[in-house]
Image (cartoon, rainbow, N blue to C red; front, side):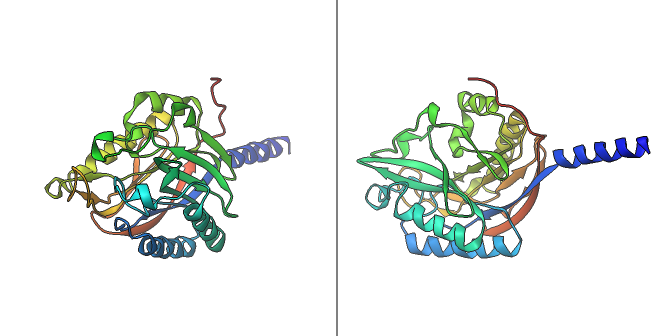
Length: 278
């Protein structure tokens, strides 16, 4: 009996340590400046996420107005504000947590931002992109600050957000590592000339793998599908090929090349860890 009791206790501990979350990787087509059309495409993706019993729906960068679209200087709204409020309403309607990249207007500044809202529509976290590639738009996005990089406690553990080129920077990666996230959600606008696809997808896969291995948690990198219509990169293509990687840096799923897709993946979360003191 004593052995049986010990085995039951150990089994219970093991089960308590095993955590998972279902993430819908929402690789959607986005048209620059087409706010209403892009909202419809977001909602279509959320319908699929709900049908697949996803806990979280993860969307790409600058979904509503288009990445590096100068029209965003006039079209973007504050956060909280009209666009983020609509995302919150969709989270309540479809019963999923949502991470999504939104352009944000704050006074005369434009930020490339991402938000995380819970199932009730509560805004849990906002991240402003630091590595904004200022040469691609005039005037450029304003930069976020390193102090704005963080993680937030949720019902699915400690979740962090950064955006696309932020993952290039070791300084940002080091800060995230110290915070011991359980899951990282990264909206991407991963673009290249048409003749560089599908090969360019391998660079995205390599980058996300490396960051997941460093952070020791699953990472979902969700890319756009479509084409840039402004600036020095006008005509470059968002090739999709979004990627979900496990806590060991192993690729679990790669989505379609240059086509919209919503795929729900089950991710095993690491055992609870303590963040390092800052």
